[in-house]
Length: 280
Image 1 (cartoon, rainbow, N blue to C red):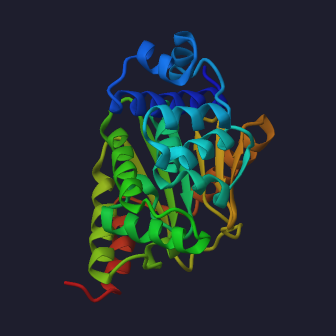
Image 2: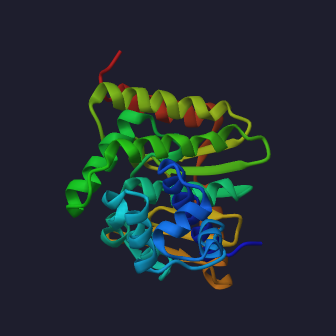
């Protein structure tokens, strides 16, 4: 199985190839322009060699795409650490962050999700996603490639309709009541969330307010095939892949599940939050 480092390296390679193709150059022509051997171009595009910041800066110059140099450097830096600060990740732009998560989802069969204050990205509608990404860009003063980020987030949702995958999602009721867009769009977002309950690839549970729980909801996290945990904090994402961390988060997810409702009761909680918006 590919490591997460290797998958991220391959995702960068896909982006590099995209820029070369957009420049209208084949591999040999591109290598000649940048002054490399064609084999280096091939290795970088296939994720068989780790790019340096200098490599991707040269690539952007050769592709006539200097505007994306910061994005590419941000992607390279994202390979370097399991504690990925939001500010550092977003130097590459929202699209790069979304494509990184999409790459993980495309290579996973089973994903467990818990969110305490936000609708998971794979269930978001464009208006809600646009509000979230705009808020993040404002908070960190980072590049505002909002529309590219929204499109990349919507593309991630293709995995919801692939029968060999399954998403086990748990939401704290508070996530349904945090309004991240205009009220009419928030109502549409809750309608969309209610509709995924019927998908064969999704099991959606909601932990209602007022239920006795043996925990306090601290932060959201995703468990990817029980080989990787991605946990959100205010300033960073933690990518955890040691057995001890995975076991801890898997046990925590199971504990959370015991306090959740599913099916029609979950739908009722979602519609209760929608009714609070006063939108017909």
